[in-house]
Length: 219
Ligand code: CA
Image 1 (cartoon, rainbow, N blue to C red):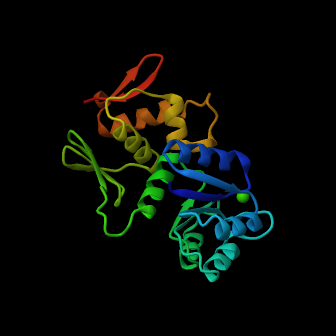
Image 2: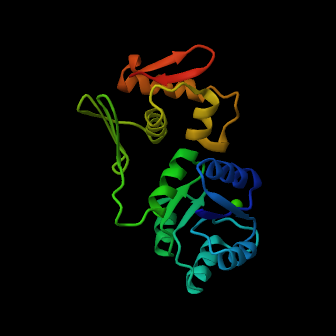
C-alpha cells in the first residue's frame, strides 16, 4: 500500500489530509514536528511526503534540505500559508516537487498527490470532459462548446469536482470540503455563491439544484 507521510503541526489540517488520503486508499502517517517528520521519513520510508513549512521546531525548508541530504528522494509536496511566487520558486528550488498554498481543497491536493506518485512513463489523463464541457487540468482552462471561459481558481476547482462526479448529487458539505477544504464552516453559503458564479459562466441549466440535498452536473 502506498504510504504518505504528512508533516504538519496543525492538528485539524493534518487530520483533514489524513482522512482524505485514507478515503482515497492511501496509508497515512502524521508527524507534528520536524524532528518526528525526519525520523519517520528515514524509518518508515514513505512513498511521498506532504510538508508544512511552519513547523514548531524547524522551518520546513531546512527540514527538506536535511531530508534531501540524507538521501530521501521521494516526491515532496509543500503545503504552506506562504503562497507568493517567490515562496513557490524557493520551495521548488529547495527540492520540493510541488507547492500548494493554504487554504487548499482536498481534490486539488489529491490530484497533485496522484500526479506525483505516478511513474513518468505512465500517461495521465489531463483532460476531463463531460458532453461539451472540457476541463484541461494542466493549463487550468475550461472550454464550453469549444469556447474558452475564464474561471477563477475556486470556480475551476468547483467545476472540476462536479465533473469528476457527473450526474451525482453532491451536497454542500461535500463541495465545501472538496473545494474549500477545512477553511470554511459548514454554515457558510459560499458554495451557493460560487455555483451561481459558475452557472453564469457555463450556463445555468448545466448545474441542477437538488432541493434539500445539493447540486448535480446535468448530463
Ligand atoms: Ca504549521
